[in-house]
Length: 278
View 1 (cartoon, rainbow, N blue to C red):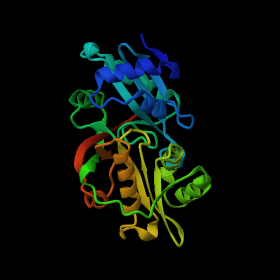
View 2: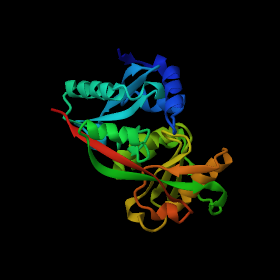
View 3: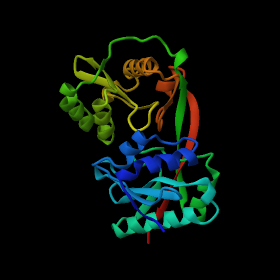
View 4: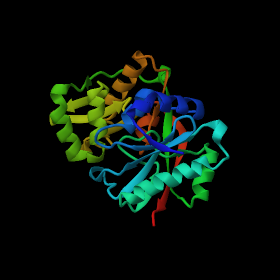
């Protein structure tokens, strides 16, 4: 019934998502997150019915040995017929065959679509519980209306290709698990950074995996708690507003303070689920 899907199927995959999900990823976002060369997804299904996309964890970000479900979607007219269960079982079997010991739904950096299952997606939460997944953590996004953000403080620049090696070294040294996202932002001219006498002081990436999402945001460790990240954060927000965004989400938030101080409020909550594969 279900077979492998490839990058050539992206238009059909995007159409399935658009008709099935309230927060459907665009065809560009699907290309960025499902078919990236350094963490390609295995996509199984039928784009007129449903599909599952699984990935293997990248050891460089501390997730080696784990498998992840990046996307699971079933067309509304095919729900209630066991399609989701069949797809999830197919994804589990593929990951198990690859020698992976567990499967996690959510928290699948660096090319995630969501940081977990939206807490409002009751049908998917129901399916995961029925399939013996355990809820392991909760993540959340923060919402921000750009009309009310503070003034642009200046003092920031957009990272250029000429600065790629410097950005990579800085990321590897201080925030290795965000290296891929920072470099992807640099490649798309969406990495804002500030400097001090010791070099890069802080960065803010945006529109990395999802358009209208902010993050990651990072300061050099010795500057954490000093507000150093506010300058590139506001620079990024002003660029996003100039680019036509009216409202944005800060994705997969850690500390609340940096975003609350510019007007963000807690928004969507996502649950991460995990299952051991035997």
